[in-house]
Length: 202
Image 1 (cartoon, rainbow, N blue to C red):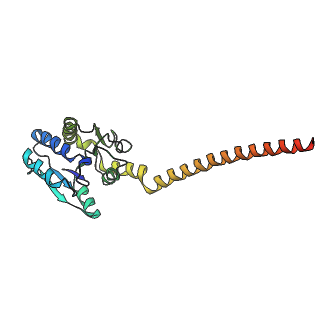
Image 2: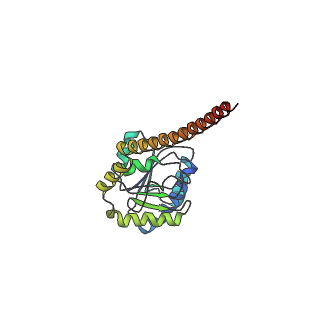
Image 3: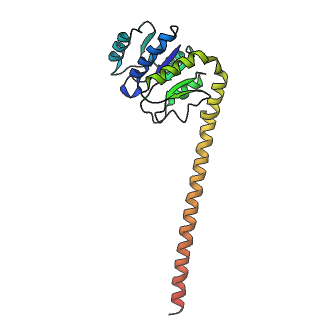
């Protein structure tokens, strides 16, 4: 069981996902896809699913509350999102925190989160590569241990980890600022010293 959660708009690549899922479904008839979210593309995507003949395997769940999103993830085997662009991608972290491996695109946000150890990355707008990743995930899902995915996610993106990184960033910024202040102060001291020296010879 695959799941995806996001606003249903073109940037999220659901059209590519449905095309890829149809190809994967032809080889693995047991596959199922639950789509959480609503948006301007919803009716068009439902029509696409009908045109592809996959409505029996794809369920549109509509807008979901946060707790419903977590319930969906807990009852799924893997998370997939075919975004055309992402600035970060909190939803990937949410999926990993629930022990789900992730299939994502190299869209700018997923690369710092998804790796060989917790999922697969595919090119943007490449439905063939995405179909292959769906099949590979179905066949090798047991390679990903939910407990380890959750633990690694917590270690990398948990509260303590994020706070630790922020403290490191602040310390570095303060240190760099301190260096600039010392250089500036040193320069002013030299200028003042030269001015005093000139006054002494007048």
